Image (cartoon, rainbow, N blue to C red; front, side, top):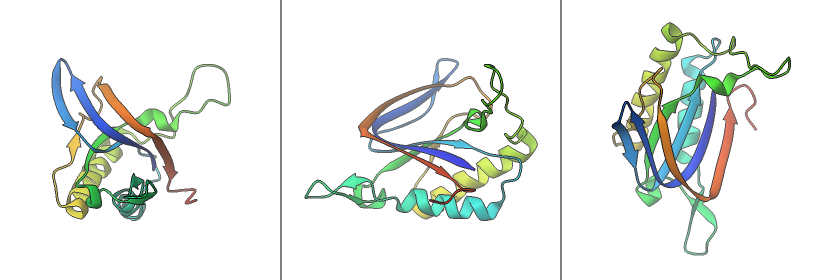
Amino acid sequence: MRAIIQRVTAASCVVDGQTTGSIDTGFLVLLGIEDSDTSEELDWLSQKIVNMRIFGDENGLMNKSLSDVDGNILLISQFTLFAATKKGNRPGFTRAARPDKAIPLYEEMIAKLSALLQKEIKTGIFGADMKISLVNDGPVTIMMDTKNKE
């Protein structure tokens, strides 16, 4: 599982002219699910996302989490995070999980983040052509991969 976490002051997702989710202060999380991913990796990643301390404290240090700033999450499924680019110029996506595997894990991630944060998680629509807008705060962008827990 891969996640791109962007600290934002605003983010939204629009599908077919309709806003499916929008937030103010919080994280825009782009989530890629690989065929070999499991609920255990989801548990680890959701904990890391919710507890990530990348909001400024009184001294300007990145020391506060989403809960500390009453932040929100906009979670967007993004299979392209598993693009294979080694060969040629057209990326391949064979490592990305097919919808029958990815949708249940995506829905499980929504439920897990909601339970941990104790608030509704805003989302896009799985598999849709989404238009994502954001104001990256900082900019702060963190990449995480459950197969490479650095």
